Amino acid sequence: MADVNPLRDAVMSYLRRRGWQVEVDEPSGIIALEQPGADDPALYTVVAVVREDDRQVLIYSACPPDVPEHRRAAVAELLTRANYGLFIGNFELDLDDGEVRFKTGVDVEGTDVDDALLDGLLRANLATMDTYLGAILDVAAGDADVSEALATTEADIG
View 1 (cartoon, one colour):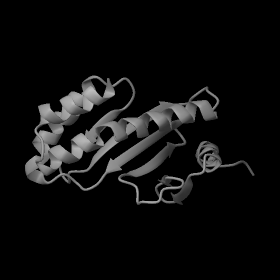
View 2: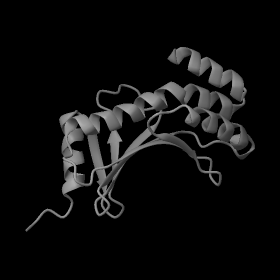
View 3: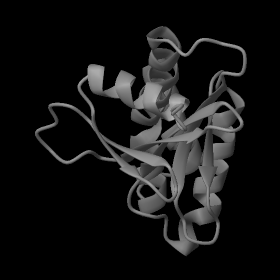
């Protein structure tokens, strides 16, 4: 019998070889990732979504807590400004519940799914979330305005 989820299995195999603990929600097909060797709980949640029929792999990093309603406009501005200069991926804000996440994705139709491809997808996601997380949290909490938070973050980038 042929494997019904070869792309998902390839992604899970890659993640396990890299030391990630993975758990699959079978109804949705979402793969929850727990960072390897983390002594402290992760600052954000990382999931992989495999769209088998469309041959797409998406990585999402969601940062807690959800943005309070009265701070969503400021965070939306921050994310819009951050997105403008990004080469790979984008930030998203759910205006209804305040969830902020960063998404990277790749269409693998006609392409071999190898470690280099998945490494690039995952590294770009984690590096970008790591870079902007402090600014997002500061603006969401009202501890910094958008210009200040973005200037500080982008000065650190170089």
